[in-house]
Amino acid sequence: MHILDMQWDKTMLNQVKKTIERFNMLKNGDRVLVAVSGGADSVVLLHVLMEIKDKYSLDIAVVHLNHSMRGEESDRDFVFVKNLAERIGVRFIGKKINVPEIKSEHGGSPQEVARRVRYRFFEDVAREYNADKIATGHTLDDQAETVIMRFIKGTSLRGMSGIPFVRGKFIRPLLNIKREDIESYAKANNIKFVEDSSNISTKYFRNKVRLELLPLLKKYNPKIKEEIARLAESASRDEYYLEKEAEKEYKTAIAGSTIPLSDIKVVFNLEKIKSLHTALTTRIFLKAIEHLKQDLSGIYSYHVEDIIDLIEGSAPQGEINLPMGITVYKEYEKLVFARERIPVPKSFETVLNIPGVTSIDKLKVQIKTSILTVSKSGEFLYDDNNIAYFDYDKLVFPVMARSFRAGDRFTPFGMKGSKKVKDLFIEKKVPFYLRRSTPIIASGDDLIWVAGIRRGDKARVEEGTKKVLKIEIIRTS
Image (cartoon, rainbow, N blue to C red; front, top):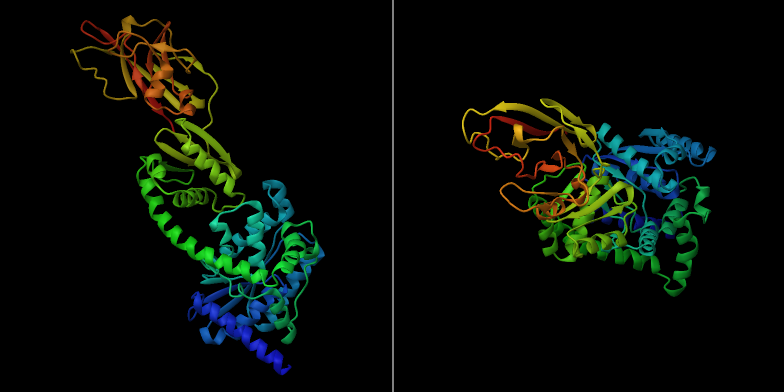
């Protein structure tokens, strides 16, 4: 090796060591999975970690996922990485999947599907082998490309933060090393690697940025990649602080709601959300989405702006749909992020079995009726929203359970005049989607109960009542 190569070689190794120490990437005795694709970046990463293996007493294993996206070339990479691991004496953990098939079943771009299944594979292997860290070969060039791609698509400070040096078990020791320096290191150390032919195809967005846009920007600033990486690190520092503050408010806003956090729904106290600075609410929204779909792929700044418009709008209710089946809706004092929106049932009408049980499957509701005799005055109290009592002899049969209809009116219990059922829904802040799924009990032309909300004045139990019809609403889920 030439003396200049040796000096440069040592400089790069020292730079990587400083990055590892600065971000506390490794601890003594760590079990490290090194993600190796076979390309220069990941092979050099493996070489560097082997160089410092003894310093940290590392237990190193190589992981590789064959995506089956490039035919024989993908198989060649698998064999290359397997042989490399065997040659240097470390464990090899490999798997072959078919990304095109997964894409056809679940949708998404090939690159996004590949990334998702690759990271899932790495995490699964880490759990199985009880690994402490997963090292990937991302470089400064990857950082610059990622920030530009996000900027073009529309992003936030979080997006401008780019690829983190450390995220959970994932570490990226080469993230401040340029790709050209890595290739020089490989050449100086006679490190063999394989070329990915798809990297020269401009049909992929990242490749277009690398091969067309970055060379153009470099004419304006020869150090454009370094400047973008510096911007990303600066944004990352600010984002870290704001993220910590948002985490506190996220928990407080959820605690202010009466509905607990679940895997399919995140419910916030709307007034609490409105009281916060937008810098925090945007991060809270992203946390909710990430909780429901595990990542933020397909979510851009304009989606967050749509949510802000929703909560700032004067209407008490409203909703927007986000990618990957996430719905955000406002309903009076609540802001809800949901993975599974409750479907609005079509109109329904059924005769109640008296006595007996009537099931309304589309509502997941059972209506139980029984006939009671009066033994003493005042024993039938109206203190349960899901139970109502009526004077059996004043009812017109058959008694029906049906859905809400436009123009419905009834006389609420204790009142003389009639009232629109729609006004009752508004008064009780019943969301749009629940109005059609609220059973309304009718006796002849009279509505006698808006189930679970308010009973009517017709057929009321009073002095002289001999028989009572008890109606109970039972939610089956």
